[in-house]
Image 1: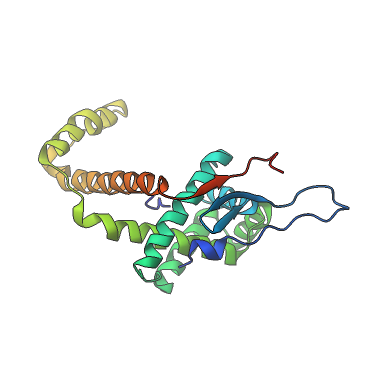
Image 2: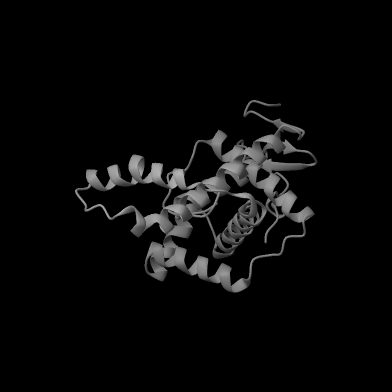
Length: 216
């Protein structure tokens, strides 16, 4: 869940009560799609995450995967709240927001993209802050126990690094020249692996109920 990038806004602040369309509209504008303990996730939460992924240049996941990600975020956010993990510094949020905005292009292009995705700058800043918060907490929780063995570095170099460069017809540097970079990459992988295992285990202890579209 690390941000290319994966987030202080606690999940409870993101879970607004469902707003249904008026009788004249005849269409459900929002609905509850899941309940986690005493909190809810709404369809608008799922749509907002999909819009944010599009803004960041990613192909949005399927709705079921987006919902699973929101549940994962809830798990991490609640654990972080219990640990009294601090909010990300405003300067860090500003820097990440600016980097995302610059990635889109000129200010008018960014504004147009937000209108297209039905997002506001405040929405994006909130989502950026949440991503930083969650990623930072997982890094804090698992970095001290993450491990990379020398044999793993050698194996990655031979099985992944070298073949990738050869497919691109690029020169292959000696292992010693890239050992530190590979170690850092594998360290991040181990943090991610441990975080995913912890989240999967935590999910089994939660009271989670999903509501399909045809749920009364």
